[in-house]
Length: 273
Image 1 (spheres, rainbow, N blue to C red):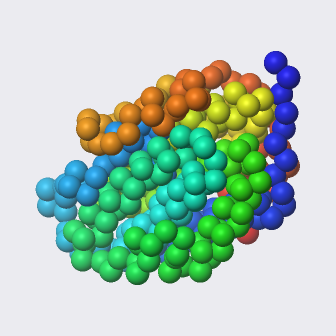
Image 2 (cartoon, rainbow, N blue to C red; image 1 turned 45 degrees about the vertical axis):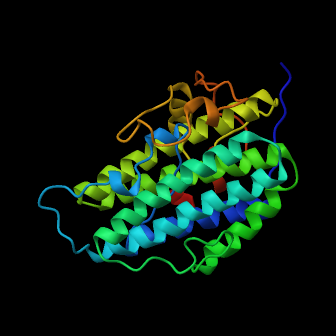
Image 3 (cartoon, rainbow, N blue to C red; image 1 turned 180 degrees about the horizontal axis):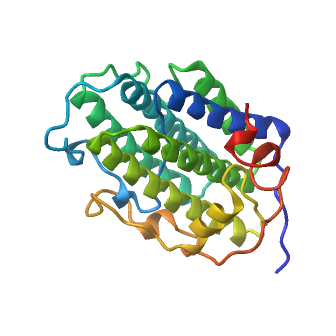
């Protein structure tokens, strides 16, 4: 089958790189996140994020900063997908946006548990307290408006960034309840990445990873749908999210093509900065 490479404008790459950089800063000064679940069931809702026995109700500064930032970063994914779903008649955006809402609810449960202040625009689509995330939202929606393929690429990039950020946050926290939720969000992001890439491949797009290491990226795509805590009755089904995508992993296909090889600016998170 003939394939085509999707050209991503420089501004689009800059926007995606900025999201990743924001996450790295949040991890250093606090922590952050990004995610989604190809099977919304992987999500943990607010009442499904129990506090581990003996867990403190007072979050450390890093965890507190990370939870607040992650609440808005998860919102970025949900809002972008909702907006793109209104432009393109492609069910994957509305289905994954619904799963992202479950992730927002899970984070809100932890914010409530630890007595933190929820960002003021948490329930308003397209508005963010963090102005860097506000700029990212505006740019990503604008870029995803160019074509269905560009919109799917926006989704794939968001999920790659989510995966990288969540791995950073998991390495920083020692809280069992926060770890539990982050791990579920991470499973969700991997599922969503598979769904977006599957639809891009069905459209004939030969996609390369833009942030993840090539080996990690191919390993995720080669794996099947993941399920985790809170997987029963938690919202959209795997088939709903994957509608039109085939919903399957694939074997390694080499390094792929893209600016500077695997990742942005020649590879990996360490290249940003």
